[in-house]
Image (cartoon, rainbow, N blue to C red; front, side):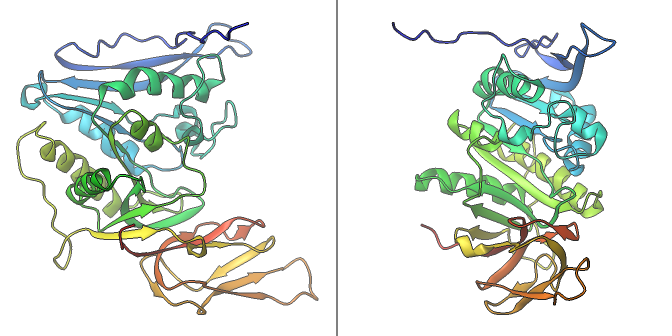
Length: 343
């Protein structure tokens, strides 16, 4: 018997007309039956500014709820944009995983999922899966560029950077690096991740859009300079695309341009060899050498066990530093970036 294609439509409903001129703000209403609320919904904020003919861009924040700079920058942008100054379409979701954003957590408190591992989603699935399906099937096909604003949450602290995936197309790499240079964070990191196939960035790439994310700050706090980088970067992207007037400000402190970096060697990831309390000897953006001391793993619950020194396995610059002291075996304690060297 032939297999039939699942054409089940999204269960999410809303009042947004993506083709209507002007500015619209509203909510994606995600059905969520619960004790005390059989027909309840989770209302995820969305804004669309449509200035007529021109390119379309998607800005997302709050994909992880403990990453705050994107939530602030995109909300502020949505409030201040004048549709009369826009040529094209800007779709903004400042707090994608709203339950996680309200709880200040990486994982969604409703279904326990990491939204950024749920694309392309499932219309029949849980909260994150439903919302991922809607974004993948309804929003992504409309846009040419996607910018997903992350910081490193509670678990890590990142060098202030944009990030992009390595793809097997030199022209796409070049165009995406140009997008990143015009976003104009201090660093842009081309990386081969541990688990990247189900992310918002990967979904945008599957739909043929140019796609960058960011990692700006972390440690579960709002970093003022990171908010400024996000706000300037979003404006820069709109100017670069010709959606609003102006020339992108790509200046960097001390001169120069965005520094192109990469993470492509498994030794770039420093994994915890066992559970313990990690004492790092480094900070983001610090240059390090292979064999240098990365830190100590302490076992405070065992008097007889000596602290374990941990060494770096590769030369480079610290991209990610740990946020929490306690680590479990297999947790990433650091990530090292190196100057971009092409394929």
